Each structure stands twice: as C-alpha cells, then as structure tokens.
Image (cartoon, rainbow, N blue to C red; front, side, top):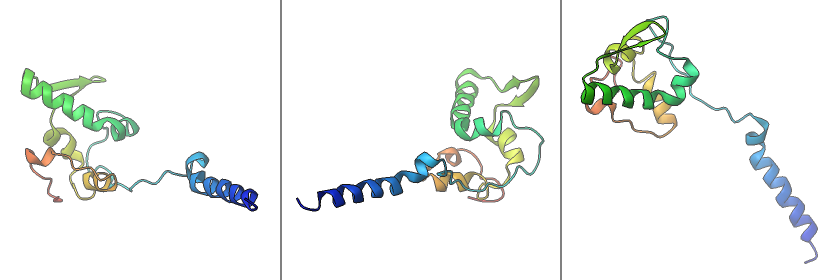
Length: 122
C-alpha cells in the first residue's frame, strides 16, 4: 500500500477525536433536575442518591413488604421507608424530577405500577 501512512495517521486522528470527550473529562452530560420543593435534607447525599436510589428503594420495599419494618433512622433522623411519604414529599413532580433522568438514561422504572404518580404527573 502506498498510502498506508496516511491511512494510519487518519485512523489515529479519528480515534483521538471520537474518544476525546471521554479522556478529557468533558463527557458530563446530564439532565437538569428540579430542586426538591420541600424538606431541607435528603436521606443521603445527592451524589450517592443519584447513583444508588434504586438500590435504596428496593431495600426499603423488601424490608416493608417482607419484614414489616416501616421506618429507619439515618444520622439520628427517623424516616418512613416509603417512596410516597418520604421521597415524594419533597420531590413532588415526577415529570420534572424522576422522568428527566429516567428518560435521559432510557430506563423505565416500575415504581408507578404500585405507587400513585405525584401531582406533577407522569
């Protein structure tokens, strides 16, 4: 091949351009969420809740349904283990809070199969 140097150089430039957002740290696209309308403090830090809320909700569901536990104390504060009574008390609009991330990530949670949709709708 007479143009192998040009092809290899082109491929290297292409790979650098395609992957530049990943290794430059600029791949931080995320939806802008509505702030909590009430309440001062969540059961955990925002960063942790963003990554782990589904695990927390599954754990709470299992404890309530299977073990009959209804509340939990975190850092000296007692919370109901309830999506409706705890989470949705502050995050009242599903379309401006829950759906923003779930749609962005193409995730369809099954919360609303059992729980009442907050007044903001679904």
